[in-house]
Length: 303
Image 1: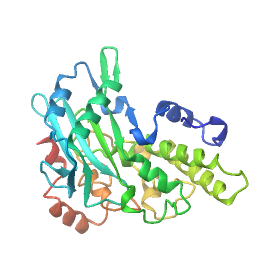
Image 2: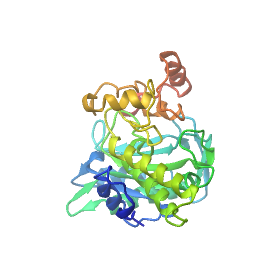
Image 3: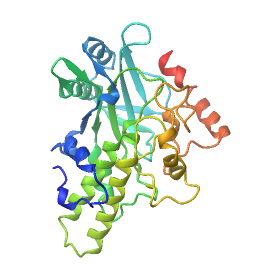
């Protein structure tokens, strides 16, 4: 259910637009988000062709989440169209803690991408977007007594995103950087708090975390200097935090088309390997991660 706007703190105007866009989609069925940011398509032939390139299997496969290129490796992408392609499908594991494998039937990934294309159709124009799988695992933990944003999260909270988008030079990780994710988890916090006695300590904890996530939804941007939804918002950021430094640069950060996204020279896949704080890491660490990932960088997707 969409969040009751009466529960939204007045210091966070504009969040209604995000929660309204999410509608009544239950977490367990997968959230689908359509946005012009992911591109628009006059025709969907190239997108359908990109989906057809995805593996087709009815049985569950343990996809290996190691960043290498392979039929059953994640993150994974396909694209279709002349030259660099007109449409791209990206499949990625999302969340601060990354599992070694992610079990899902390949046909389910195909179904998710096709469903997204249908949902995002607007008259003669088709928008891109992303859809999630197993989002309820993260939401369930965040709303539990053990849930925390600033401590390591269990590996089982990871979820999957399938994106249909115009070609990008790297992995876009909407499950990390799209403000709809912060709004989604904020909604879950307030909804769980509404089921408890208002004066209870747990309800207060949930409301505080919901307000923090709403604040993040307002300052997040899926392009330029991107900030993960679990980072600290400006009011909570400590001096020297990667999140604080990045938020100070949001207004002047480079956007899509830059040789490398600011603070993420090796591509979004590297940010996923720095679990809780979203830092890209030292130059030495980045080079080591690139070697482990088989050199996946900007040229890896567009070449």
